Length: 122
Length: 408
Image (tube, rainbow over all chains, first blue to last red; front, side):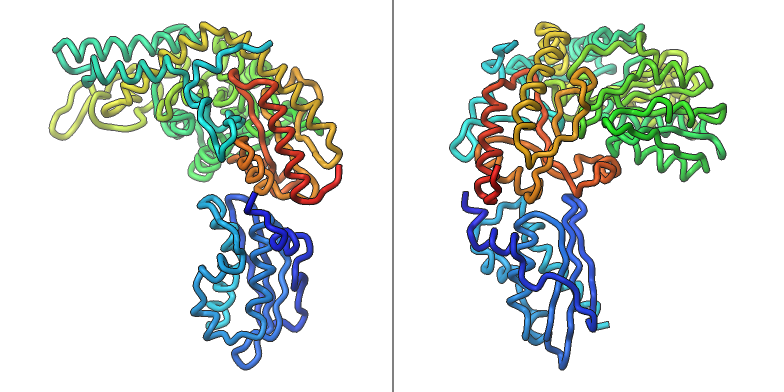
Protein backbone atom coordinates (compact mmCIF):
# COMPACT_ATOMS: atom_id res chain seq x y z
CA UNK A 1 0.00 0.00 0.00
CA UNK A 2 1.07 3.58 -0.69
CA UNK A 3 0.83 4.97 2.84
CA UNK A 4 3.87 3.24 4.29
CA UNK A 5 6.60 4.37 1.89
CA UNK A 6 10.26 3.54 2.58
CA UNK A 7 10.83 7.15 3.56
CA UNK A 8 8.01 7.17 6.13
CA UNK A 9 9.04 3.85 7.66
CA UNK A 10 12.65 5.00 7.84
CA UNK A 11 11.66 8.16 9.75
CA UNK A 12 9.32 6.15 12.00
CA UNK A 13 11.86 3.47 12.89
CA UNK A 14 14.86 5.83 12.99
CA UNK A 15 13.47 9.25 13.88
CA UNK A 16 15.63 12.33 13.39
CA UNK A 17 16.13 14.79 16.27
CA UNK A 18 14.79 12.39 18.87
CA UNK A 19 15.48 13.36 22.49
CA UNK A 20 15.54 16.40 24.75
CA UNK A 21 17.43 19.72 24.86
CA UNK A 22 18.74 20.64 28.31
CA UNK A 23 19.27 24.37 27.57
CA UNK A 24 15.97 24.66 25.69
CA UNK A 25 14.02 27.89 25.21
CA UNK A 26 10.62 26.20 25.04
CA UNK A 27 8.96 22.86 25.70
CA UNK A 28 5.43 21.95 24.63
CA UNK A 29 3.33 18.82 24.77
CA UNK A 30 0.55 17.85 22.38
CA UNK A 31 -1.56 14.75 22.14
CA UNK A 32 -4.27 13.26 20.02
CA UNK A 33 -6.83 12.10 22.59
CA UNK A 34 -8.66 9.88 20.10
CA UNK A 35 -5.76 7.55 19.41
CA UNK A 36 -3.37 8.39 22.24
CA UNK A 37 -0.52 9.76 20.08
CA UNK A 38 1.80 12.13 21.97
CA UNK A 39 4.66 14.50 21.17
CA UNK A 40 6.90 16.46 23.52
CA UNK A 41 8.86 19.11 21.62
CA UNK A 42 11.91 21.05 22.86
CA UNK A 43 13.10 24.13 20.96
CA UNK A 44 16.21 26.25 21.28
CA UNK A 45 15.59 29.68 19.82
CA UNK A 46 18.25 32.36 19.20
CA UNK A 47 17.72 35.63 17.32
CA UNK A 48 14.21 34.55 16.32
CA UNK A 49 15.62 31.44 14.69
CA UNK A 50 15.22 27.79 15.66
CA UNK A 51 18.79 26.66 16.23
CA UNK A 52 17.90 23.26 17.69
CA UNK A 53 14.87 20.99 18.02
CA UNK A 54 14.31 17.67 19.73
CA UNK A 55 11.20 15.59 20.36
CA UNK A 56 10.01 12.52 22.20
CA UNK A 57 6.88 10.91 20.85
CA UNK A 58 4.68 7.89 21.01
CA UNK A 59 2.25 7.05 18.27
CA UNK A 60 1.59 5.71 14.82
CA UNK A 61 4.07 5.72 11.94
CA UNK A 62 2.37 8.68 10.28
CA UNK A 63 2.40 10.99 13.32
CA UNK A 64 5.98 10.15 14.30
CA UNK A 65 7.46 10.18 10.77
CA UNK A 66 5.70 13.47 10.10
CA UNK A 67 7.25 14.98 13.24
CA UNK A 68 10.68 13.64 12.32
CA UNK A 69 10.51 15.14 8.82
CA UNK A 70 9.19 18.42 10.14
CA UNK A 71 12.04 18.64 12.66
CA UNK A 72 14.59 18.49 9.82
CA UNK A 73 12.61 21.06 7.87
CA UNK A 74 12.35 23.74 10.59
CA UNK A 75 15.89 23.63 11.96
CA UNK A 76 17.63 26.92 11.13
CA UNK A 77 14.39 28.59 10.01
CA UNK A 78 13.20 32.04 11.15
CA UNK A 79 10.12 32.06 13.43
CA UNK A 80 8.41 34.58 11.12
CA UNK A 81 8.62 32.07 8.25
CA UNK A 82 7.43 29.13 10.38
CA UNK A 83 4.40 31.07 11.59
CA UNK A 84 3.30 31.40 7.98
CA UNK A 85 3.90 27.72 7.21
CA UNK A 86 0.77 26.02 5.86
CA UNK A 87 -0.36 22.44 6.56
CA UNK A 88 0.29 21.67 2.90
CA UNK A 89 4.01 21.74 3.74
CA UNK A 90 3.51 18.64 5.90
CA UNK A 91 1.70 16.77 3.11
CA UNK A 92 4.51 17.76 0.71
CA UNK A 93 7.06 16.29 3.12
CA UNK A 94 5.10 13.05 3.60
CA UNK A 95 4.57 12.51 -0.15
CA UNK A 96 1.86 9.89 0.41
CA UNK A 97 -1.94 10.14 0.21
CA UNK A 98 -3.42 10.95 3.63
CA UNK A 99 -7.03 9.79 4.10
CA UNK A 100 -9.42 11.88 6.25
CA UNK A 101 -9.04 9.40 9.12
CA UNK A 102 -5.28 10.00 9.25
CA UNK A 103 -5.19 13.83 8.94
CA UNK A 104 -4.89 14.28 12.71
CA UNK A 105 -1.97 11.87 12.79
CA UNK A 106 -0.20 13.65 9.94
CA UNK A 107 -0.65 17.09 11.50
CA UNK A 108 0.16 16.32 15.14
CA UNK A 109 3.77 17.55 14.77
CA UNK A 110 2.59 20.66 12.93
CA UNK A 111 0.08 21.39 15.73
CA UNK A 112 2.83 20.94 18.32
CA UNK A 113 5.08 23.40 16.49
CA UNK A 114 2.32 26.01 16.18
CA UNK A 115 1.55 25.56 19.89
CA UNK A 116 5.25 26.17 20.71
CA UNK A 117 5.41 29.28 18.52
CA UNK A 118 2.33 30.75 20.20
CA UNK A 119 3.73 30.05 23.66
CA UNK A 120 7.05 31.68 22.72
CA UNK A 121 5.28 34.85 21.50
CA UNK A 122 3.84 35.34 24.97
CA UNK B 1 -20.30 -24.53 12.85
CA UNK B 2 -20.90 -22.05 9.98
CA UNK B 3 -24.37 -20.54 9.88
CA UNK B 4 -24.21 -19.88 6.10
CA UNK B 5 -26.21 -16.68 6.25
CA UNK B 6 -23.87 -14.28 4.41
CA UNK B 7 -26.41 -13.98 1.58
CA UNK B 8 -28.84 -12.32 3.99
CA UNK B 9 -26.48 -9.33 4.41
CA UNK B 10 -26.28 -7.26 1.19
CA UNK B 11 -23.31 -5.16 2.38
CA UNK B 12 -21.07 -8.24 2.51
CA UNK B 13 -21.06 -8.22 -1.30
CA UNK B 14 -19.22 -4.91 -1.50
CA UNK B 15 -15.51 -4.55 -2.05
CA UNK B 16 -13.06 -2.31 -0.22
CA UNK B 17 -9.85 -1.24 -1.97
CA UNK B 18 -10.65 -3.92 -4.55
CA UNK B 19 -10.79 -6.66 -1.90
CA UNK B 20 -13.70 -8.63 -0.45
CA UNK B 21 -15.06 -6.82 2.62
CA UNK B 22 -14.19 -8.66 5.82
CA UNK B 23 -16.12 -6.83 8.51
CA UNK B 24 -14.57 -7.41 11.94
CA UNK B 25 -15.81 -4.30 13.75
CA UNK B 26 -19.01 -5.77 15.14
CA UNK B 27 -18.39 -4.49 18.66
CA UNK B 28 -18.82 -0.99 17.18
CA UNK B 29 -21.92 -1.82 15.13
CA UNK B 30 -23.34 -4.82 13.30
CA UNK B 31 -24.33 -5.11 9.64
CA UNK B 32 -28.00 -5.40 8.69
CA UNK B 33 -29.97 -8.28 7.17
CA UNK B 34 -32.18 -7.68 4.14
CA UNK B 35 -35.26 -8.61 6.16
CA UNK B 36 -34.61 -5.56 8.37
CA UNK B 37 -33.98 -3.25 5.40
CA UNK B 38 -37.23 -4.43 3.80
CA UNK B 39 -39.17 -3.82 7.01
CA UNK B 40 -37.86 -0.25 7.18
CA UNK B 41 -38.86 0.38 3.57
CA UNK B 42 -42.24 -1.24 4.15
CA UNK B 43 -42.99 0.97 7.15
CA UNK B 44 -42.42 4.19 5.22
CA UNK B 45 -44.19 2.97 2.10
CA UNK B 46 -47.29 1.52 3.77
CA UNK B 47 -48.12 2.69 7.31
CA UNK B 48 -46.04 5.80 8.08
CA UNK B 49 -47.95 7.98 10.58
CA UNK B 50 -47.38 9.41 14.02
CA UNK B 51 -48.35 7.17 16.90
CA UNK B 52 -50.60 7.35 19.98
CA UNK B 53 -52.67 10.30 18.76
CA UNK B 54 -54.40 9.75 15.45
CA UNK B 55 -57.73 8.03 15.00
CA UNK B 56 -57.07 7.39 11.35
CA UNK B 57 -56.11 3.97 10.03
CA UNK B 58 -52.43 4.65 9.39
CA UNK B 59 -51.92 6.03 12.89
CA UNK B 60 -53.61 3.03 14.43
CA UNK B 61 -51.52 0.62 12.36
CA UNK B 62 -48.34 2.52 13.12
CA UNK B 63 -49.10 2.53 16.86
CA UNK B 64 -49.87 -1.17 16.72
CA UNK B 65 -46.61 -1.97 14.95
CA UNK B 66 -44.59 0.17 17.39
CA UNK B 67 -46.18 -1.34 20.49
CA UNK B 68 -45.84 -4.87 19.07
CA UNK B 69 -42.07 -4.40 19.07
CA UNK B 70 -42.17 -3.33 22.72
CA UNK B 71 -43.88 -6.67 23.38
CA UNK B 72 -41.33 -8.51 21.23
CA UNK B 73 -38.41 -6.81 23.00
CA UNK B 74 -39.84 -7.73 26.39
CA UNK B 75 -40.08 -11.39 25.33
CA UNK B 76 -36.57 -11.31 23.82
CA UNK B 77 -35.00 -10.36 27.19
CA UNK B 78 -37.41 -12.31 29.37
CA UNK B 79 -39.08 -9.27 30.96
CA UNK B 80 -42.34 -9.75 32.85
CA UNK B 81 -44.27 -7.35 30.66
CA UNK B 82 -43.94 -4.86 27.80
CA UNK B 83 -44.50 -2.12 30.37
CA UNK B 84 -40.92 -2.63 31.56
CA UNK B 85 -39.48 -1.62 28.17
CA UNK B 86 -38.59 1.99 27.31
CA UNK B 87 -37.32 2.99 23.87
CA UNK B 88 -34.47 5.51 23.82
CA UNK B 89 -32.00 6.48 21.14
CA UNK B 90 -29.04 4.35 22.33
CA UNK B 91 -27.43 2.61 25.31
CA UNK B 92 -25.91 5.88 26.46
CA UNK B 93 -29.32 7.55 26.65
CA UNK B 94 -30.76 4.52 28.47
CA UNK B 95 -28.04 4.78 31.14
CA UNK B 96 -28.39 8.56 31.41
CA UNK B 97 -32.14 8.10 31.88
CA UNK B 98 -31.45 5.95 34.96
CA UNK B 99 -28.86 8.42 36.26
CA UNK B 100 -31.34 11.30 35.97
CA UNK B 101 -34.73 9.72 36.63
CA UNK B 102 -33.72 7.29 39.37
CA UNK B 103 -30.24 8.46 40.45
CA UNK B 104 -30.97 12.09 41.27
CA UNK B 105 -33.89 11.05 43.49
CA UNK B 106 -32.21 8.18 45.28
CA UNK B 107 -28.49 8.95 45.50
CA UNK B 108 -27.46 11.28 48.31
CA UNK B 109 -24.23 12.67 49.72
CA UNK B 110 -22.10 9.90 51.22
CA UNK B 111 -23.88 7.14 49.27
CA UNK B 112 -21.72 4.85 47.18
CA UNK B 113 -21.98 3.91 43.51
CA UNK B 114 -19.89 1.02 42.20
CA UNK B 115 -18.84 0.50 38.58
CA UNK B 116 -16.29 -1.94 37.18
CA UNK B 117 -12.87 -1.30 35.64
CA UNK B 118 -14.16 -2.84 32.39
CA UNK B 119 -16.71 -0.14 31.63
CA UNK B 120 -17.27 1.66 28.35
CA UNK B 121 -17.41 5.45 28.89
CA UNK B 122 -21.22 5.19 28.55
CA UNK B 123 -21.39 3.29 31.85
CA UNK B 124 -18.74 5.35 33.64
CA UNK B 125 -19.12 9.05 32.80
CA UNK B 126 -22.84 9.38 33.79
CA UNK B 127 -21.94 7.94 37.22
CA UNK B 128 -18.89 10.21 37.60
CA UNK B 129 -21.21 13.13 36.92
CA UNK B 130 -24.00 11.90 39.25
CA UNK B 131 -21.48 11.42 42.08
CA UNK B 132 -19.98 14.86 41.46
CA UNK B 133 -23.43 16.47 41.60
CA UNK B 134 -24.74 14.59 44.64
CA UNK B 135 -21.54 14.17 46.66
CA UNK B 136 -21.77 10.38 46.42
CA UNK B 137 -18.62 8.25 46.22
CA UNK B 138 -17.66 6.35 43.07
CA UNK B 139 -15.85 3.03 43.56
CA UNK B 140 -14.27 0.79 40.95
CA UNK B 141 -14.32 -3.04 40.89
CA UNK B 142 -10.74 -4.17 40.14
CA UNK B 143 -9.69 -6.79 37.56
CA UNK B 144 -7.81 -10.04 37.93
CA UNK B 145 -4.67 -10.64 35.87
CA UNK B 146 -6.86 -12.66 33.51
CA UNK B 147 -8.93 -9.54 32.60
CA UNK B 148 -11.93 -10.75 34.62
CA UNK B 149 -13.81 -8.92 37.36
CA UNK B 150 -12.29 -9.54 40.78
CA UNK B 151 -15.37 -10.78 42.65
CA UNK B 152 -13.58 -10.84 46.02
CA UNK B 153 -12.46 -7.28 45.38
CA UNK B 154 -16.06 -6.39 44.56
CA UNK B 155 -17.34 -7.91 47.82
CA UNK B 156 -14.86 -5.76 49.76
CA UNK B 157 -16.36 -2.63 48.16
CA UNK B 158 -19.95 -3.53 49.03
CA UNK B 159 -21.50 -2.12 52.20
CA UNK B 160 -24.79 -0.67 53.44
CA UNK B 161 -23.92 2.69 51.82
CA UNK B 162 -23.81 1.05 48.38
CA UNK B 163 -26.92 2.27 46.53
CA UNK B 164 -26.17 1.32 42.96
CA UNK B 165 -23.90 -1.13 41.11
CA UNK B 166 -23.37 -0.66 37.37
CA UNK B 167 -21.58 -3.33 35.35
CA UNK B 168 -21.19 -4.33 31.75
CA UNK B 169 -22.35 -7.78 30.69
CA UNK B 170 -19.32 -8.12 28.41
CA UNK B 171 -16.31 -5.90 27.81
CA UNK B 172 -16.02 -4.29 24.38
CA UNK B 173 -12.20 -4.35 24.69
CA UNK B 174 -11.25 -7.71 26.23
CA UNK B 175 -14.49 -9.60 25.64
CA UNK B 176 -14.53 -10.50 29.36
CA UNK B 177 -17.92 -11.84 30.39
CA UNK B 178 -19.19 -10.53 33.71
CA UNK B 179 -21.20 -12.82 36.03
CA UNK B 180 -24.08 -10.34 36.23
CA UNK B 181 -26.40 -12.71 38.10
CA UNK B 182 -23.85 -13.20 40.88
CA UNK B 183 -23.10 -9.45 40.97
CA UNK B 184 -26.84 -8.77 41.27
CA UNK B 185 -27.32 -11.25 44.12
CA UNK B 186 -24.38 -9.80 46.06
CA UNK B 187 -25.58 -6.23 45.46
CA UNK B 188 -29.19 -6.93 46.43
CA UNK B 189 -27.96 -8.48 49.67
CA UNK B 190 -26.83 -5.00 50.80
CA UNK B 191 -29.92 -3.32 49.32
CA UNK B 192 -28.21 -1.83 46.27
CA UNK B 193 -29.86 -1.61 42.85
CA UNK B 194 -28.10 -3.05 39.78
CA UNK B 195 -27.78 -1.73 36.24
CA UNK B 196 -26.39 -3.99 33.51
CA UNK B 197 -24.89 -2.42 30.37
CA UNK B 198 -25.79 -5.16 27.91
CA UNK B 199 -24.66 -3.25 24.78
CA UNK B 200 -22.23 -6.04 23.87
CA UNK B 201 -23.64 -9.11 25.62
CA UNK B 202 -27.17 -8.74 24.22
CA UNK B 203 -26.00 -9.57 20.69
CA UNK B 204 -24.02 -12.68 21.52
CA UNK B 205 -25.94 -14.73 24.07
CA UNK B 206 -29.41 -15.23 25.49
CA UNK B 207 -30.33 -12.51 27.99
CA UNK B 208 -32.99 -13.06 30.64
CA UNK B 209 -33.58 -10.16 33.00
CA UNK B 210 -35.70 -12.20 35.41
CA UNK B 211 -32.95 -14.78 35.68
CA UNK B 212 -30.29 -12.10 36.22
CA UNK B 213 -32.58 -10.28 38.62
CA UNK B 214 -31.14 -6.86 37.70
CA UNK B 215 -33.13 -3.65 38.18
CA UNK B 216 -32.07 -1.93 34.95
CA UNK B 217 -30.66 -3.26 31.70
CA UNK B 218 -29.55 -1.07 28.79
CA UNK B 219 -28.69 -1.88 25.19
CA UNK B 220 -28.82 -0.62 21.60
CA UNK B 221 -30.48 -2.23 18.60
CA UNK B 222 -27.67 -1.41 16.16
CA UNK B 223 -25.26 -3.94 17.63
CA UNK B 224 -27.85 -6.71 17.15
CA UNK B 225 -28.68 -6.31 13.43
CA UNK B 226 -31.14 -3.47 14.03
CA UNK B 227 -30.98 0.25 13.25
CA UNK B 228 -28.85 2.98 14.79
CA UNK B 229 -30.95 5.39 16.83
CA UNK B 230 -32.92 2.84 18.84
CA UNK B 231 -31.87 2.06 22.39
CA UNK B 232 -33.70 0.00 24.98
CA UNK B 233 -33.98 0.49 28.71
CA UNK B 234 -35.47 -2.29 30.79
CA UNK B 235 -36.75 -1.09 34.16
CA UNK B 236 -38.07 -3.52 36.76
CA UNK B 237 -41.77 -2.69 37.06
CA UNK B 238 -41.71 -1.96 40.80
CA UNK B 239 -39.23 0.91 40.20
CA UNK B 240 -41.07 2.78 37.45
CA UNK B 241 -43.53 4.61 39.71
CA UNK B 242 -40.80 6.18 41.87
CA UNK B 243 -38.83 7.50 38.87
CA UNK B 244 -39.24 11.02 37.44
CA UNK B 245 -39.77 11.63 33.73
CA UNK B 246 -36.53 11.93 31.77
CA UNK B 247 -37.64 14.62 29.30
CA UNK B 248 -40.73 16.81 29.27
CA UNK B 249 -43.07 17.62 26.39
CA UNK B 250 -45.51 15.88 24.09
CA UNK B 251 -46.89 12.36 24.55
CA UNK B 252 -45.52 11.85 28.08
CA UNK B 253 -48.33 13.91 29.64
CA UNK B 254 -51.70 13.02 31.14
CA UNK B 255 -53.16 16.55 31.12
CA UNK B 256 -51.66 19.98 30.51
CA UNK B 257 -52.96 23.24 31.93
CA UNK B 258 -51.44 26.65 31.25
CA UNK B 259 -49.12 26.64 34.27
CA UNK B 260 -48.95 23.02 35.44
CA UNK B 261 -49.12 19.52 33.98
CA UNK B 262 -49.72 15.96 35.07
CA UNK B 263 -47.49 13.25 33.64
CA UNK B 264 -48.10 9.68 32.65
CA UNK B 265 -47.01 7.28 35.35
CA UNK B 266 -45.99 4.22 33.34
CA UNK B 267 -43.12 3.69 30.82
CA UNK B 268 -44.66 6.36 28.58
CA UNK B 269 -43.33 9.11 30.86
CA UNK B 270 -39.84 8.33 29.51
CA UNK B 271 -40.83 8.67 25.84
CA UNK B 272 -41.39 12.38 25.25
CA UNK B 273 -41.92 13.71 21.74
CA UNK B 274 -42.16 11.85 18.46
CA UNK B 275 -40.31 8.57 18.71
CA UNK B 276 -38.10 6.81 16.17
CA UNK B 277 -41.10 4.73 15.14
CA UNK B 278 -39.89 3.42 11.78
CA UNK B 279 -36.61 2.17 13.21
CA UNK B 280 -38.31 0.58 16.21
CA UNK B 281 -40.73 -1.23 13.89
CA UNK B 282 -37.85 -2.43 11.68
CA UNK B 283 -35.94 -3.48 14.81
CA UNK B 284 -38.76 -5.98 15.28
CA UNK B 285 -37.65 -7.69 12.04
CA UNK B 286 -34.06 -7.88 13.37
CA UNK B 287 -35.35 -9.51 16.57
CA UNK B 288 -37.32 -12.04 14.51
CA UNK B 289 -34.19 -12.82 12.51
CA UNK B 290 -32.06 -13.36 15.63
CA UNK B 291 -34.77 -15.57 17.09
CA UNK B 292 -34.92 -17.62 13.91
CA UNK B 293 -31.16 -18.27 13.95
CA UNK B 294 -31.28 -18.75 17.73
CA UNK B 295 -29.14 -16.98 20.33
CA UNK B 296 -27.54 -20.23 21.49
CA UNK B 297 -26.50 -21.08 17.92
CA UNK B 298 -25.07 -17.56 17.57
CA UNK B 299 -23.20 -17.87 20.87
CA UNK B 300 -21.70 -21.19 19.80
CA UNK B 301 -20.72 -19.89 16.37
CA UNK B 302 -19.13 -16.70 17.73
CA UNK B 303 -17.18 -18.59 20.38
CA UNK B 304 -15.82 -21.10 17.88
CA UNK B 305 -14.67 -18.28 15.65
CA UNK B 306 -13.01 -16.52 18.58
CA UNK B 307 -11.20 -19.71 19.55
CA UNK B 308 -10.01 -20.10 15.95
CA UNK B 309 -8.79 -16.49 15.80
CA UNK B 310 -7.03 -16.77 19.18
CA UNK B 311 -5.23 -19.93 18.09
CA UNK B 312 -4.10 -18.33 14.81
CA UNK B 313 -3.04 -14.99 16.27
CA UNK B 314 -1.22 -16.44 19.27
CA UNK B 315 1.17 -18.19 16.88
CA UNK B 316 2.79 -14.82 16.13
CA UNK B 317 5.38 -14.14 18.80
CA UNK B 318 5.22 -10.35 18.36
CA UNK B 319 1.47 -10.36 18.97
CA UNK B 320 0.13 -9.82 22.45
CA UNK B 321 -3.53 -10.69 23.08
CA UNK B 322 -5.68 -9.13 25.80
CA UNK B 323 -8.17 -11.91 26.33
CA UNK B 324 -9.23 -14.14 29.24
CA UNK B 325 -7.53 -17.57 29.14
CA UNK B 326 -10.70 -19.62 29.35
CA UNK B 327 -12.77 -19.10 26.20
CA UNK B 328 -15.95 -19.64 28.25
CA UNK B 329 -15.26 -16.32 30.00
CA UNK B 330 -15.00 -14.49 26.72
CA UNK B 331 -17.28 -12.94 24.10
CA UNK B 332 -16.18 -12.66 20.46
CA UNK B 333 -13.84 -9.68 20.85
CA UNK B 334 -10.08 -9.93 20.41
CA UNK B 335 -7.85 -6.98 21.28
CA UNK B 336 -4.17 -7.18 20.44
CA UNK B 337 -0.99 -5.22 19.97
CA UNK B 338 2.06 -5.98 17.83
CA UNK B 339 5.48 -5.06 19.12
CA UNK B 340 6.96 -2.25 17.04
CA UNK B 341 3.74 -1.35 15.18
CA UNK B 342 1.18 1.14 16.39
CA UNK B 343 -2.45 -0.16 16.40
CA UNK B 344 -3.50 2.68 14.09
CA UNK B 345 -1.03 1.47 11.49
CA UNK B 346 -2.21 -2.12 11.92
CA UNK B 347 -5.79 -0.98 11.23
CA UNK B 348 -4.67 0.97 8.14
CA UNK B 349 -2.86 -2.02 6.62
CA UNK B 350 -5.80 -4.32 7.47
CA UNK B 351 -8.13 -1.84 5.75
CA UNK B 352 -5.96 -1.93 2.63
CA UNK B 353 -6.69 -5.68 2.57
CA UNK B 354 -10.45 -5.14 2.95
CA UNK B 355 -10.43 -6.06 6.65
CA UNK B 356 -12.30 -3.58 8.88
CA UNK B 357 -10.97 -3.53 12.45
CA UNK B 358 -10.86 -0.83 15.11
CA UNK B 359 -7.83 0.79 16.74
CA UNK B 360 -7.67 3.09 19.74
CA UNK B 361 -9.20 3.28 23.21
CA UNK B 362 -12.58 1.81 22.13
CA UNK B 363 -14.35 4.38 24.34
CA UNK B 364 -12.83 2.65 27.38
CA UNK B 365 -9.80 4.82 28.09
CA UNK B 366 -9.29 3.86 31.76
CA UNK B 367 -9.42 0.15 30.86
CA UNK B 368 -6.92 0.44 27.98
CA UNK B 369 -4.56 2.37 30.29
CA UNK B 370 -4.85 -0.47 32.82
CA UNK B 371 -3.74 -2.86 30.07
CA UNK B 372 -0.52 -0.81 29.96
CA UNK B 373 -0.64 0.11 26.27
CA UNK B 374 -1.38 3.42 24.49
CA UNK B 375 -4.14 1.70 22.47
CA UNK B 376 -5.08 -1.67 21.00
CA UNK B 377 -6.18 -3.08 17.67
CA UNK B 378 -9.47 -4.96 17.97
CA UNK B 379 -11.25 -7.62 15.94
CA UNK B 380 -14.83 -8.47 16.86
CA UNK B 381 -16.91 -11.22 15.29
CA UNK B 382 -20.57 -11.87 14.63
CA UNK B 383 -22.84 -14.46 13.09
CA UNK B 384 -21.96 -13.72 9.43
CA UNK B 385 -18.18 -13.98 9.97
CA UNK B 386 -16.39 -17.14 8.89
CA UNK B 387 -13.07 -18.91 9.36
CA UNK B 388 -12.18 -17.56 5.90
CA UNK B 389 -12.58 -14.05 7.38
CA UNK B 390 -10.13 -14.92 10.15
CA UNK B 391 -7.73 -16.38 7.56
CA UNK B 392 -7.89 -13.09 5.63
CA UNK B 393 -7.13 -11.23 8.88
CA UNK B 394 -4.12 -13.49 9.43
CA UNK B 395 -2.88 -12.64 5.93
CA UNK B 396 -3.39 -8.94 6.69
CA UNK B 397 -1.30 -9.38 9.83
CA UNK B 398 1.46 -11.05 7.82
CA UNK B 399 1.32 -8.18 5.35
CA UNK B 400 1.57 -5.67 8.24
CA UNK B 401 4.65 -7.41 9.64
CA UNK B 402 6.20 -7.44 6.17
CA UNK B 403 5.59 -3.72 5.56
CA UNK B 404 7.11 -2.85 8.91
CA UNK B 405 9.99 -5.29 8.30
CA UNK B 406 9.30 -7.26 11.46
CA UNK B 407 10.43 -10.87 11.31
CA UNK B 408 8.18 -13.57 12.72
